[in-house]
Length: 257
Ligand SMILES: [Zn+2]
Ligand SMILES: [Zn+2]
Image (cartoon, rainbow, N blue to C red; front, side):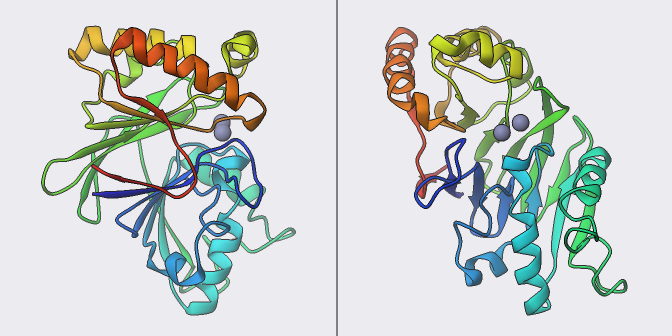
């Protein structure tokens, strides 16, 4: 599968976008930059969006994406828990504020088709088998392992904090995309908010390797630009210690899984 990272940062700027991953141009995971980092034509090719959790940096572009689909008479399936759908519909897509694309604007033909996901229950999304895997974050969060028809596996964890290696062990990916929001200097803040810094990443990968016997290729996103230089140095050190391939992702990075 061809994986394109639209946003690799905990930042929203002309050259840095919130986390969103697009697979084979048609399936997206999270929607922090699904409209701001894609052309309108590219947006209309996206048929399915999997949401990890309701935090604004992961869903905010649903408002613009839905609007563009509406104009084109198109629809998209939105995969999330009932709780995430409820939060989005009462905040971002509240009809006092914008348009509830789950209900309209034409009630007979809403723009967003809701699809419920539940932890550990495998579903088919287009050509992919998808397993939602819960992780530890400040709100309930599901990562997703995608398996394509030829058996290649991508696992994107969503936001998660120290101790997540136990949760990752439910997956066996070729490529692991996870977050590294802070540097080790901010380890306390990272732990408090359910995020990773390089030392927590190392601990989690060690737990993963003990369970699964290997460390997949690792790509890090959700990087806070204020700490990126230090994160890079610390991640390089973790990669050396673990003899693992660990890279910081970047906007428009393309991966073949
Ligand atoms: Zn979050
Ligand atoms: Zn986030």
